[in-house]
Image 1 (cartoon, rainbow, N blue to C red):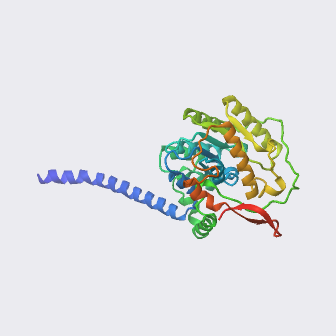
Image 2 (tube, one colour):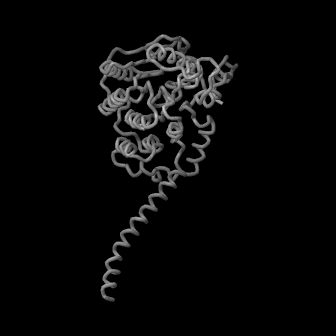
Image 3 (cartoon, helix red, strand yellow):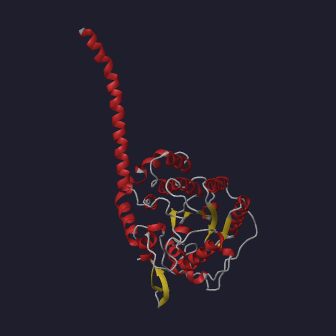
Length: 357
């Protein structure tokens, strides 16, 4: 009997070691994840604010780079026409990350219109640098969708994208101070809008970049994920708009956008390249730099986009349109869009520039 108990104890020992090892590994992974959360930048705010939206409250959702999140103001769409919209943005957001953000968005939102930023279609890489890739995935909740986004975002550094610690641990002081200061400057990016204020002076007021009629096939990975986004949106019953806001482009970029137009026509979805439309945009005064708009440009572009969407899509008025309606889009986004004076190169204020508070 004693020998039997001894054998049982001896057999039990390896199992305890295995369980202990698993527990230790789990604790280490949790600690690394927690440390990564403390040290990482606040790039997850776009995701956090999307998760915080009331279910099925965004009728329009934008996906893409700073060419949408700094160039389109949801508060103007709401105040002008009662259109509720959210920008699921990310700095330099590749089209494959836009696709996984769209999949994530459909967990709680069912937008009537999905707007896809065309800027990333000119990227000539299949993977971004590791820190840039991390910024695109770190805000997603843990799920198979996040794991697939990580797989699409990195060829060999999946663990780094999972936990982030190897990317940021050597820069914790300047990293935390930099990103917290950056976010405090404009608030929490409500509705995804992140404004730029300065006026670009590299071009005369009558400058126009022109357009190219050539067609250059975009990179295969970009085309694959563009098609996946369109097909997913159509499967879910959303209409689609491919969008390029005004910016100083070269002929190569323009020829890529022409390929995107062909793909849009194939799926019978809308495509709007604003450089091909005369709507009064003044490149010499309404650019903040070569691809982002100052608040003059944001207002003009958003006003025109609002009119375009009203003319081409069926979008409900949820209480805006200049009336007394309230709602989250007015209370959260509009207060940071009051009129102030912008200065032109340090000189006299320009009249009526939009600015965030």
